[in-house]
Amino acid sequence: MNLVQLGDAEQWPALGLGTWRFGEAATRHAGEVAAVRHALELGYRVLDTAEMYGEGGAERVVGEALAGAVREGVVKREQVLVVSKVYPHHASAAGVQAACERSLHRLGLEQIDLYLSHWRGSLPLEETLEGFTRLVAAGRIRHWGVSNFDLQDMHALRQLDGGGHCATNQVYYAASSRGVEFDLLPWMQNQRMPLMAYSPLDEGKLAHDTRLAALARVLGLSAAQLALAWVLRQPGVMAIPKAGSLQHLRDNLVAASTTLDAAACAAIDAIFPAPRRKQQLAMI
Ligand SMILES: NC(=O)c1ccc[n+]([C@@H]2O[C@H](COP(=O)([O-])OP(=O)(O)OC[C@H]3O[C@@H](n4cnc5c(N)ncnc54)[C@H](OP(=O)(O)O)[C@@H]3O)[C@@H](O)[C@H]2O)c1
Image 1 (cartoon, rainbow, N blue to C red):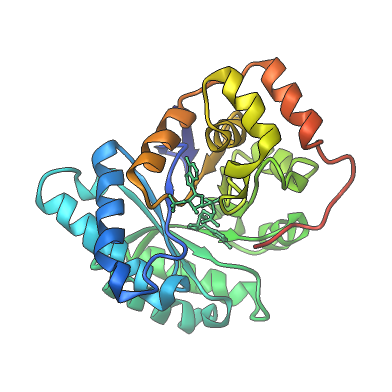
Image 2: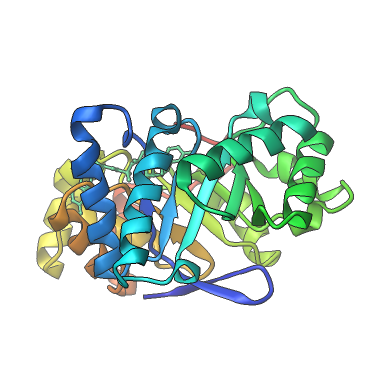
């Protein structure tokens, strides 16, 4: 599996686990904790969550699974990159710090490894940056970054004092949503900033794409595996598919270690053409 450079001194596996839709129902809580635990046992080391997911419920699921795995010696805390996100309406200088403390409490952690602004809202970026900078200084987060920022937003961020410390931009990127390839992804690769691809299976829809399935069958893969291997074909790209079932967790690990040849990539281009002009950043 590819490793992705985060900041100056860290490398993380290119495949992580998403947790959107976790934490929404008490009846599913135990199963979701078990899914995250399975992921850690299988070797997943990047967990993506947000205060928005289940209004904190997903952070509780992640925290409970991680605590159990650490307690029982499955992983050490420092071997896992915990990613969470602040709502834009909480992203004032003081608000971001208060939101982070609430997330830390739900996660049961002393520190979030990577804390993202979930999308650009109406509060000034300077404020959010100030909050992030204070959280880093206080040791409550290790890295900060953004999500759903298009290229012009990245330029605006770069112009601010400290804006160069942005560790990542998490955006919607799947075979069926390739707009970022036109400008944002090359810019980020040039800046050596990893792109975190969310919804790499297009919320599961690509698993049912018959054209992908036909192509995947020849390669001994499922349609979802092919879609995921395709997103992960490039350096500097991480992907965080959400998977609640053990089979999907396993399948996605196999996909992340699959290298596609030029013919397979060309066949995918024929189904989902690369962008030929600027497209507004897609968001889910
Ligand atoms: N920053 C943002 O604004 C933003 C927005 C959206 C998502 N995200 C993050 O990105 C993560 C992933 O995105 P997503 O949840 O929207 O969609 P996704 O990962 O593209 O798709 C998830 C769906 O695919 C299914 N799946 C997973 N692996 C599969 C496999 N190998 N074969 C067949 N089906 C498979 C899952 O089913 P099972 O659960 O049944 O396994 C689930 O229904 C989220 O969970 C969240 O952490 C961030």
